[in-house]
Amino acid sequence: MSGRTGPRRVIIMGAAGRDFHNFNIVFRDDPRTRVVAFTAAQIPGISGRRYPVSLAGSLYSDGIPIVGESEIESLIKRESIDSVIFAYSDLLHADVMHRASRVLAAGADFSLLGPRATQIPAKVPVIAVSAVRTGAGKSQTARYVARHLRTRRLRIAVLRHPMPYGDLAAQAVQRFASADDLSAGRCTVEEREEYEPHIAEGNVVFAGVDYEAIVRAAEADADVILWDGGNNDFPFLVTDFHIVLADGLRPGHETAYHPGEACLRMADVVVIAKTDAALLEDVQAIAANVREVNPCASLVYAASPVRLDKPDLVRGKVVAVVEDGPTITHGGMASGAGFAAARQAGAKAILDPRPFAQLSIAAAFAAYPHVGPVLPAMGYSEPQLDDLAATLAAMPVDTVLLATPARIERLISIRQPVARVTYEYADSGKPTLSELIDCFLDAKISGKED
Image (cartoon, rainbow, N blue to C red):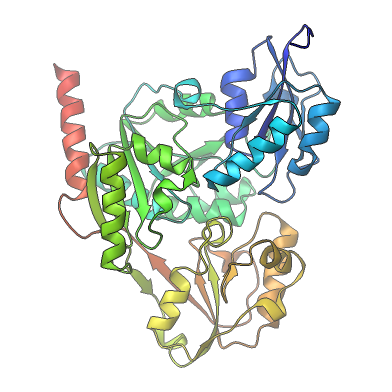
């Protein structure tokens, strides 16, 4: 023991989401702990800023610095750090432990906070959609669930996993019900990818930084809260019915990534997605893995049919494909629905964007060398959007094929004709997800009446 007295000194290792939530729920008002810094790695432009005083609370009159993860060893030693709390998602288990080894070698403890410490209870039932990996199909599944809940004449509030990349104080509690709300909130492309499809279907989306306040705002005008998860994180709310997606195209990933395996083990329902594009033996292998680690979960099989709005703009043409950003970057997929749609529609060629990539887009390709001949829809900032527009403008293609849910053609100028790809949830076996939701709701309502 060092013999040092005073509050325990802590760093929260995160990526602008789970880290802020863990601080707000566990540490913000705890005088026994002093959070010295957050670290950031995945999201550009986050490090070098501060978590604002308005969110940090009375114990942090100067806010809290956000520093690059590369500085963690020197920060541990310089600030006499006692403990590092790991708080981000979608990493191989081995990569989590490599970070643990760095922390331990520098002299600090390494730990993780679980659901019991960090989940918020709501006054209404909570249905959550999570996944074992980024890009497994959460978004279309959440929209499917929302549509089914509306057939039951239930008022729904969608709570989205945080993506607070702008003015954190202004983003404490956000409510999006229209396209104008997205513009007023200065939403990034990544945020629009998640919010726009919900809003188009009439769902109100809540998000932000302070989820205690967000939950209180959402439950005030909802019969059911639908948690639409991010990456492969577990829900921020105490959950009554937990749906977890496994990706039929990535067998073995369901038990290889943190915290996706934890989600799998706590699931009430596991949906094996993309069965229409997956190999039968891969689907069978995933099902066997699910039954081994969570034999009590109901198993659902689902397709993700891809639709192309203007096939004539793709057939026989040279195209540039823009895919959903997170799926292609830290989600680890070489390509997505856009690439598949272009091939199915008979594109003459899918042009590799690397020779034309500008600045931050070129940097993304360098950071994620697994990416195939597609463009991730990068747009965390205006300069990134400018680089995306300049990259597309430089590409000698007949058509730009947009497979991101965000309407980026409204945000940047694209000189070539544009075709869009969409993808939705579709049951491909029994039981169906809607049948299981109905069983849950009937039991919940019956329980309340009893």
